[in-house]
Image (cartoon, rainbow, N blue to C red; front, side, top):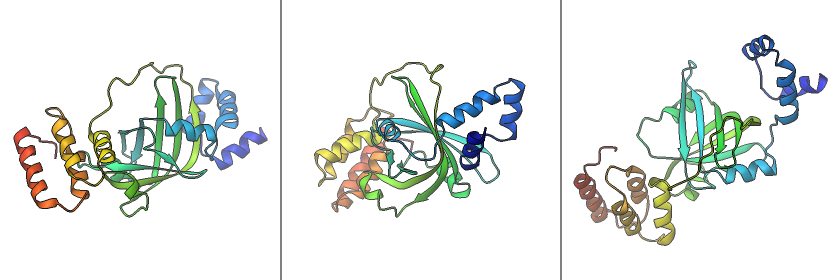
Length: 239
């Protein structure tokens, strides 16, 4: 019991609402044992490898009044980086312009991240406090990113995978992933990003590509005009 109390004192796992339901369904002892055995505040080597291998995660936030929001964040493996034993970071790319999640984080830093490997299956939860910055030194290492989010972990713990459906990746998303491919193939030319845009199918998201093009190189005026013409021609309405 003392070990559980020490864990609870350091790691925020349960509150009065959790305890009421644990007592109702007689799971308090199980919940305490799970917290004692699995909850931690420092990333293990296994956690680092698992997070680095993921293509996506779900981000839960709430505004200053507690109104919740949940969003999907995706990228190539490695787009979420564990920086030290308590900190991870991920990029924010241009999307629909609503900034629901990161707007919440500016007002209420408490966030929850859920990483799921649907192929294993396995999942990991990270609850912590987020900062959002446009001048983070990591920004230049994320091609096309607008912002970098850093999360200081307060609680790290795995979840039971019993109800996870097994799924596999059929096709990589276009968007930022396609930009990464083009940029890595020809980092000195904005023309590569335009080629990526032209390869994208009708109606697919293109704003991340356009945003990246605005960041790369100096040959801007003529190419931006060409991009504008491409957008009009495709009737893209997601800007």
